[in-house]
Length: 387
Image 1 (cartoon, rainbow, N blue to C red):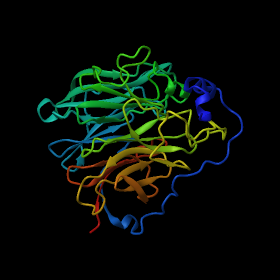
Image 2 (cartoon, rainbow, N blue to C red):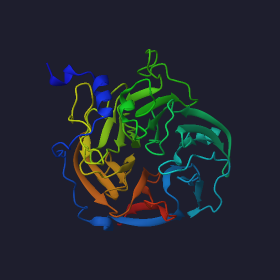
Image 3 (tube, helix red, strand yellow):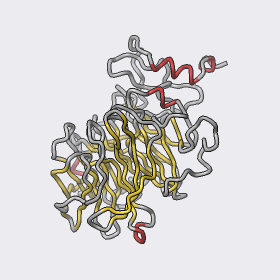
Image 4 (tube, rainbow, N blue to C red):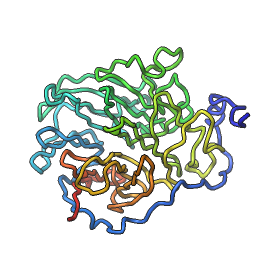
């Protein structure tokens, strides 16, 4: 019998909620962080599309070539004809803005060309009761109308951090939504009756897909797609295979790249490669029966935020590689993928705190950069090969 099977997941999660104690042995790393790419940032031609932004969190590309940009302080902006439109989009609901809370992701409806619908995620509520919310709205080029809430985390929290907030569209036209653990509620990531520390899946109108893994299960929230997460701020779906990738902030060390499967448990806080910020051990386990191991983890942390799967032709040899923004090991990280395996890692734009990374319709790479303390110096950059 495996020694792990002697303790139930639920019992261990409850025990870990109060776990302190001395730090365990130093965690092993899966790979050593690569040095900057040999060609360095000279590999890129860097074009600044917008600047003076407050924590630009996400990008979405419109059919007419314009770009939507969210700012965490609650503004939705438009880059049109290569310049930032001075007036923010009207009609955006006011988010709860504090610490990590605010306006998060923006995504187009797959039928945007005909219905003009977009989706926004943001922190909603008050200091003592707030949650991750997703709305749909009609965008006319200058304002939002017909706003509808299609998702809100079932569990409210009283912390202004760990919201998740990333959105991704699956090939079956359902929507994935990441929800963080709220920081003070990490044991709830293992509780299927609680909305924190999960990835949710809903239809585009907010209804629950009948084939969700816990739909119809007594005591479980039907919107849950996967669980055991800490704070997932990168989410991308491979258009060729449908594989779902997510990046997740660990505590002190233990950031993760995961392949997300329906109904799977990703271990937090039962299994982790990180330590508490105090240096105390969170769990004695880096692996635990019934939980999924990450495809890659980082010790020390890089602070992964924003994730894209490069599918273009501009950057020779990069097709299928993963692009990861980083807030701690500040850089754009490229994970070299060959035959489904990560075989290397390179860093570009070192020193830039990168919140989001996207591939544009033109095959260029677009990133948002931000200031740690929220100063209005955020930028949107377009990266193309230098030659």
